[in-house]
Length: 105
Image (tube, rainbow, N blue to C red; front, side, top):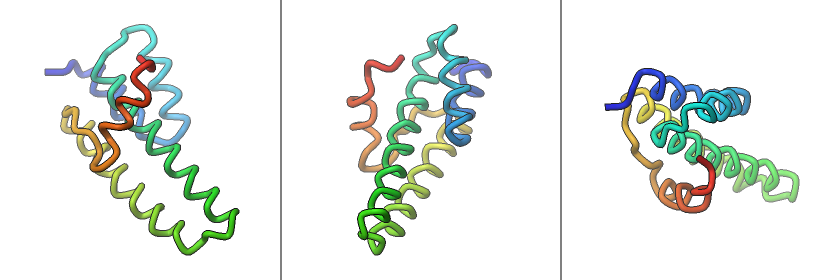
C-alpha cells in the first residue's frame, strides 16, 4: 500500500504541467517509485499532447482531434489509477513510457 504522500504526488503529477513540475520536485526528496511511475506516465501524455499540437501546425489538423481525444482518455485512465492508488499503465503506450523515461526517478 502506498503512503498518502506518495499517492498525493501521483495525483498532482496529472494536474497540468505545473502540477507535474510540483510532483517532480516533491518526489526528488522522497524518491517514491510509485510517484515516479505516475510522473513518467504524465510526461509521456504531455509529449503526446505536444505532438498533437505540432500536427495542427503542420496542416495535419484532421488527425489532431483524434490524437487529442486519445490523450484525454489515456489521461483519465492514468488519473483514476493514481486516485485509486494503483500503478496501472495507460493503455497502449504506458509500458513504453515507463521504458523510455526509466532514467527519471
